[in-house]
Amino acid sequence: MLRRIKIFFIVILLLLVGSTLAALWFLPGTFSAKGTPPEWEVKAARFIRHLATPSHFLKMANPVHFSPENLAQARHHFADHCATCHANDGSGKTHMGPNFYPPVPDLRDPAIQAMADGELFYIIHYGIRFTGMPAWGKGLPEEDLDSWKLVLLIRHFPNITPEEITEMKQYNPLTREEREQQEALDQFLSGEDVLPQEHHH
Amino acid sequence: MKYFSILAVLCSMFLATPVWAHGDASHVMGTVTELGNDHVVVTTPKGESLTLAFHPQITFQQNGIHVEHARPQVGDRLVAEVSKNGVPENRDWVATEITFSTPQKKP
Image 1 (tube, rainbow over the protein chains, first blue to last red):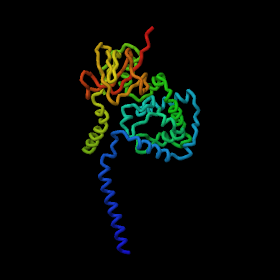
Image 2: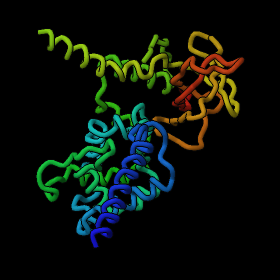
Image 3: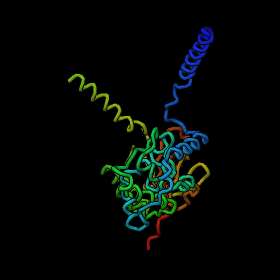
């Protein structure tokens, strides 16, 4: 009997030593944010996140109705708080967006658009751990109408217009110099004669 | 005071990192005169002709909206974010992002 207990503890000890060595072998570099996650990892992470969303949120309907006023408020809010990472058009194509792990998703993507309103709201309100997505919600979820308005905007992204993008640019957090440069570039693109300015990042 | 100075230097190093990160990128703006599969030729407002090679991860924006398949056409105006890193032979810049639009004709 004593011999069996000894063997049991030796096996446990070997397993612990083995798993520690394996961890030391595999871990270095695994917390780097460089690179793009493989497709299986994206699918697995989204599936687990879906499972981690409380079921009553998945069934929630958006309490904010679709109106030009609510959509305008959401655009201003998004341009000020979210566009630095997500881009005004929701594409995630910003200086920082592709450098996160996982990269900032394209909110126009069918996989995102297929998510329930309540699941989108849950992500905005509570954030996503181990990603760049912070928890924006203040107070109780049922009182967080700003996040519900952002859900409206996410639904609208596939049809967003150039005029709406132009309007959103006014609300992007930029320095005075960046705003002047942006306005000069926009004037040139709209067909006006603009002299080029020296600009480096 | 000594510890405060060390802390200030460390903080400034971390705060400065994002600025170092995209070192030599700058903007080129011009009107498209030629379009290829891997490059575009533009004439700048100063009349200079520049050939911009496409970076493998280049992104395109049409009228401020990111697009997957649309590309600038001859006569369109574009603003390109460009770099001198890895410029191929016979090219002036490598473009990492191109924003383009078709200017409305003046009446």
